[in-house]
Picture 1: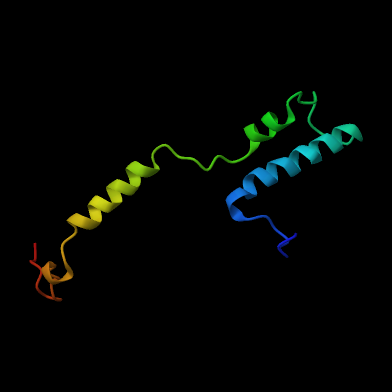
Picture 2 (picture 1 turned 120 degrees about the vertical axis):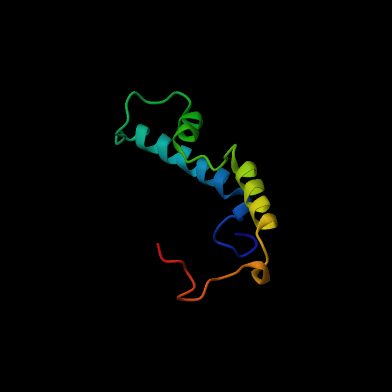
Length: 90
């Protein structure tokens, strides 16, 4: 807010979202409007277990395979596209 921005920087938006979620969970249990029982003792840990994990172990492997495919792909000048009627009849 001091910088004139309404939202936190994307670099830490996940952590800010978790802190907000912890406050919401504390509020709903304090006011008796929660729908998940029993109440989690470690609310931040509970929230972290429910959020989408953006880390993938295989991302680098898939990225590397994609790079290898790009490197081994023939140039467009090396690709021969048959003209209509050039295919063999069986």
